[in-house]
Length: 185
Image (tube, rainbow, N blue to C red; front, side, top):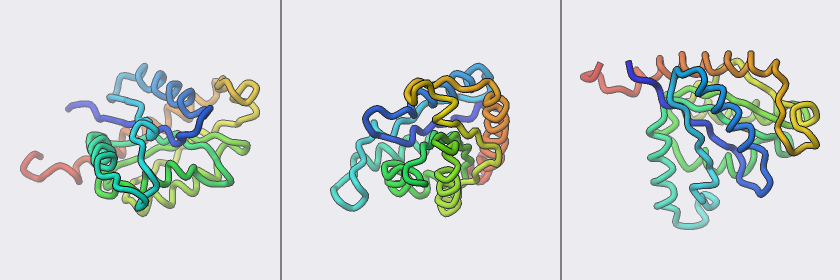
């Protein structure tokens, strides 16, 4: 059986964001496992304007094509005002079918581990027919980031990260059967 393709979605586009550091950590740990093809997907690379404000056919086509290649996701989510970033919500809204019948894990960070943003994201993912998994690494801005800028996660997060990846792969594999035409099975 071929390996699943899992996208690590960076959920922020702002200058000075921390999500690339967290995403690289997730990718490094995931790649060491060797059980799937993991790739960073940076929503900033797609230059998506606010939905409905400009013709974004080219950007939306590229974004949807990237999502369609993936079997599952790990969202790197930072808490902004008790929710997800506007850029992540916008990117979620630019696709529909490309999200359907896939699984997702969430790695969040913020003053309370990004828990409120993760909970908001779970509701949105449900509407997009994405099955979010239970295990959720929650990183603290106070203990996992030196001076609020340099990511230095506590070792205890490895247990949750690996548990989340186990669940994402199990669910992604199961849900892939819903997307594969019957004649291929």
